[in-house]
Amino acid sequence: MNPEFRRQLWLQFSPTRLAVMPALMLLTFAATCLTAQKSVAMALTMVASGAFCIAVYVVGTMAAGASVLDEVADRTWDQQRMSAMQPWAMIWGKLLGASSYGWYGGALALLVAIPSALSTEFSPQVFTMALTAIVAGLGLQSLLVAIHLQRVKVGGAGSQRGGVAALVMVLLWTVPAMLSTFKLGEVQWWDITFSASGMLLISSILFTACAVCAAWRLMAEVLAVRQVPWGLAGFAVLVGFYVAGFSGENRALIFGSGGLITCAVITYGLLLAEPQQRTVWQKVVARWQEGDWRGAVRQLPGWAVILLLAMLFAFWITLEAQSVAHTGALWLDAFHSRPLVLVLTMVRDSAIALFFWFSPKPRRASFAFGLTLVVLHALLPWLVKAAGGELTLQLIIPYSAGEDVAWLGTIVQLAIAVAALTWRWRTTAPV
Image (tube, rainbow, N blue to C red; front, side, top):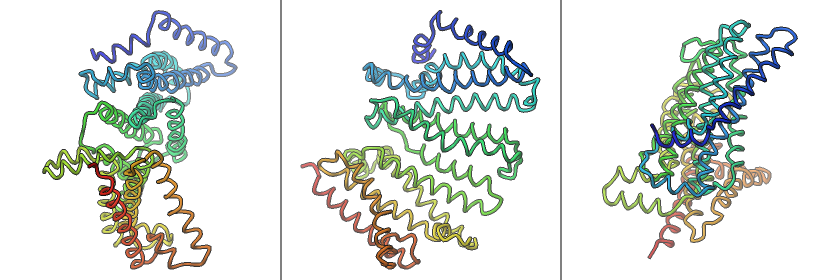
C-alpha cells in the first residue's frame, strides 16, 4: 500500500471518529423523518445531499488542503521531499488519504440520498447527478491541494486562508457558468446532444482531470523533479476545444481565440504570482549553449512555454480569420485581425517583468510589474485619450490601432523592452 496513503489514513481515522460520523448521520436522518411535513423521501434526499456536500466539499476539501500546509507548519515537509516517493504516488496518497474521512461521511450520505431520490421527481437523473457530485468533490480537493502546492512553491505557505480565498474565487467564476446549463434543457456540444446533467458531468470530468494533473505536476516541481512543461499548454488547448464545442460555426476560430485568451490569463497570472529567478534563466542559457535542448526546455518556466503556444494560436487565428466576416464589434474584429500584435504585447510585458526581477534587489519586483501594467494598459491611455492625442494613443495601445500603426507601435515598444532587459541581464551578470 502507498505509504503516504496509509499514513494519512492513520491520521484521519480513530475508533471514536469511526463511530461519530454514522451516529451523526443517523440522528440527522431520524430527525428529518420525524419532522418532514409532506414527502419524507424528498426531505431525506435534500438533507442527505446537504450532508454529502458538507462532508466532501467542506470537511474533505479542507483536510486535503491541510495535508500540504500542515507538513510545512510541522516542519516535516523536508523529510517528505527527501523520501523516495514519486510525485504521483505522493499526490494521490495525500489527496485520497487526507480526504478519506470526508468521503466516509459522503458515502454514508449517498446510501440514503440515492434510494430516497429514486422515489422522487429526480429519479431519471439520480445516478448521473451522484456521479457528478463525486467527481466535483475530487476536483475541489485537487484544486485546493494544487493552490497550496503553488503557494509552497513560491514560498507563501504561511496562511491557509489565502488558498481558501483563491478556491472561493475560482468557484465564484466557474460554478454559475456550469449550473447555467440547466436552464438550457439540452446542450449541443460538438454536434452531439446532451442533457443538462450529462453536460455537467462531462464538464466536471474534464476539469477535475485538469485539477488532478495540476496537483501532480506542482507536486513534481515542489519535489524538484523536472518535467517537460506541457501541463499548462495542454490546459489551454483543452479550454479552446471545450469552448469551441458549443459553437455552431467558426469553430476553428473560436478554438484559437479561447486558447489565446487562456494563454494570456495564465501568462500574466504566473508573471505576477511567481518569482522570476535569474538562476532559472541562467540554467536555460547554459543548457542551450551546451546543445542540450531537452534540458533547456525542462528548465523553462511554465509561462514561457505558454507564450510560445500563444504565438501558435495567433498564427492559427490569423489564418482562420481571413474567411470570417466582420462582426461589427470593434474589439472582437481587432482581436481576430491582429492576434500577433496582442502576443507581441504579451512578450513586451514579459520582458518588463524580467527587467524588474533581474534587478539586484528584486524584493518588490512583482508589485512594480503590476503597477507598470496598470500604467501602460489603463492610466496612460486614459490620460492620452483625455488630452486628445489619438495617434499617440494608438502607439501606446497598438492592438486598438490600424494595421500599420499597430505593427509600428508594437515593434518599437518590444524593441525598447528587450533592449532594457538585455542591458539589465549584462549589468547584473555574476562575476
